[in-house]
Length: 431
View 1: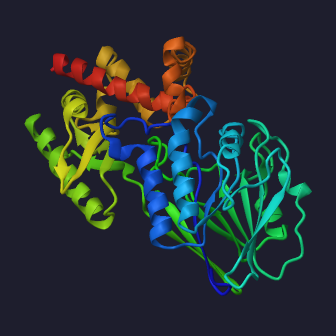
View 2: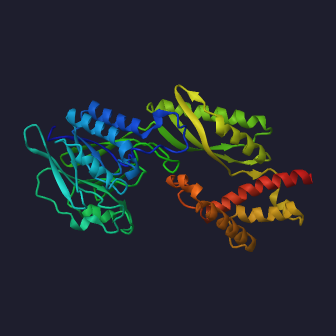
View 3: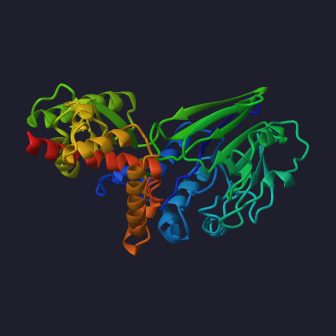
């Protein structure tokens, strides 16, 4: 370890014991455990000084024993390889991580701030002089409504101080250790390595690094983009951060314009060709990527709404193209298309297609003040809430997109798309 340059490999929100949703369950390459192993291997290969874990490394109490083997083995390998491990517990592993830590008796492993009190550890260089100091705070229970920063005190040190905290940065209100960015910036630390938010975010506040590494492996479609770990380098007067794309999975929204499609058989061809081209570009740029779960967004004017719904629905159940070892699936698709006939002209009639066209114009324009639209939204909300409250819905509550019942805007979009399919039927029969 050099006093002049300290290298840290940082990750958080690993959620060992949980599997990413809406991807092939038989593909073990997509497991969180495999990417955790890749994180450990990367830290050892790069010979970093410390691996920093910012909380929620274990998914929950229920997954503790499933996660234990991978976590223990990884920490053991890191310490044996000369890499110090500095960690805090988050809201998901507030109980499980300390229990696991008690059975991992290693001098190079430091779980800071147990019981909700600030703790620190000093990392020394080969000459015995202090290279850096870490201060950290762990969740004592599943929720924490107060900011933990009020109790932070720092010992005098000539070297850099790195804060490690699992928290929600924002307004200063919430149930997961809420803190304000300006409060973080005023704290006596040179950089913050944070956990809880799954979207990677490298932020500077008054020159101070406030880094959310994000989830190591994305866990559901609500976590799009590139995920992995961050290499943080601490030098005199400068702290830099570089994203390392270690994740094997990516969730991606992909738009397709179907305006020029004239026949049903063209749908499958365009979808397959477009996915292959995009997958080739992604796998070429991100070598660690082994799977992309696409959410297709169909745009443009077409009279093939029903055909798209049926064809892509079948493709989503079975399609899995392979490009140079990387595969793809369709995890969902949305129809944001419009009819290729004049909806406003159709709405002039007072027959069923005309009445439905009138309603669709209001739904499409977001006119939620219309009495009929309000009635539809109320009925849809009541129906979806009933489904959400049922016991059979429980498995879907682990997915960020289905954790809560759909809101007003989501219901409006759903009604609009279903209305288009119905209008296609009515318009076809009318013609």
